[in-house]
Image 1 (cartoon, rainbow, N blue to C red):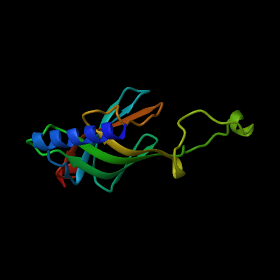
Image 2: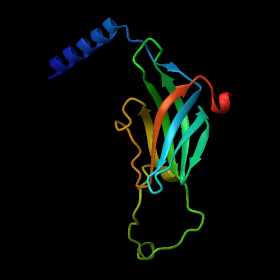
Image 3: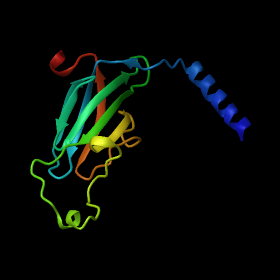
Image 4: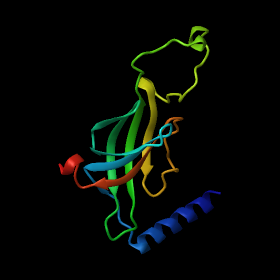
Length: 149
């Protein structure tokens, strides 16, 4: 099994080297698309790396964005952290009173963290936010931030 794995990795490395593939280049901005599944409205969001955006009850922080050079196959990848925001008015439900688990997306980390990882523009389903109300995916990385800054 180990021999097969080494052979596969070596073959993949040679194929990448032969194809002239180059590394993704860092970019200072990102363009995301967010969808509210209830209303069907989609919104394009633009931000600089390090900025935090709010969409509905989500808070999206852009940690990094990389894009392939123009001569390569188009690809953009962004590292995002998505947190759930607390509701303005919290109504205590019967399930919470009884100490039972409530419905909705379950945070994977502290402070309502729902997603932390890389999203790829070419395959949005590969690493996706799993939320009953919202979808967020990467469109592209920009050489500038919002409003051309």
